[in-house]
Image 1 (cartoon, rainbow, N blue to C red):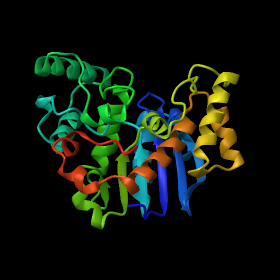
Image 2: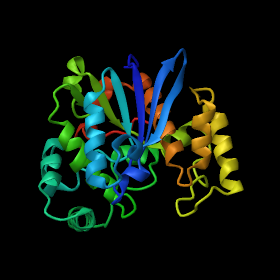
Image 3: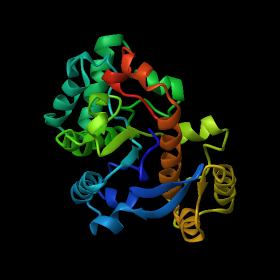
Image 4: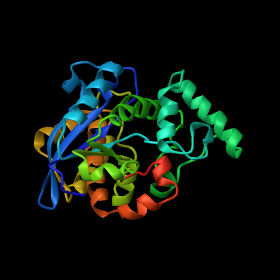
Length: 280
């Protein structure tokens, strides 16, 4: 599962100008470490910042990749307790693809269905609890990522036979040119014992000294796993929102996880193949 030519980390966004906030890290294995080859916002690849155009370009980038793994930082599925979406992941995908409203109304629908099904407004997936993701997957802070990631990226890629979206499509793995998995930079930092807070300043124009110190500590901890050239290191320090750094962490997390998790156990799990698994 580590036999890839390239490992990509994608820090995702469902914002109106998603191309400015999504960063893509392209890495290659170099011995026991990764080598960061490229780190850019999606807008630099797509030439546009608007969500529809940027996400369409991201789908095209993934489809055009060969022998590649992609770690994407958004929830790939919803908790099985939201029964009205269906009892399987393909049913969830069909539901969200045909949902008539926007991301906000989808989040409100999820809250209502959760209240009806389990008596509380929010419920976490098993994998969210296990790897300590910051939010449940329809929390208002990430529901735009969930909605647009599932509807505009994954739903399109399910139509590509040479693409395996894990853990839902292990049956495609033997014939796949590319693998796509769910990443979570925060969970990876927690697993590695590195700072997982106080390194982002999305509303700022520059990065403050305390945030730079935290980023310096994170990068020092990542040196064991990835080589980051000076130009990319400069971009990580200059990006206020921390999206560039998160893309790098996503690549490291999925590369390590794909090579270490028990894939047979994941396929047998009663919930993972229905609601998702975080490869962090």
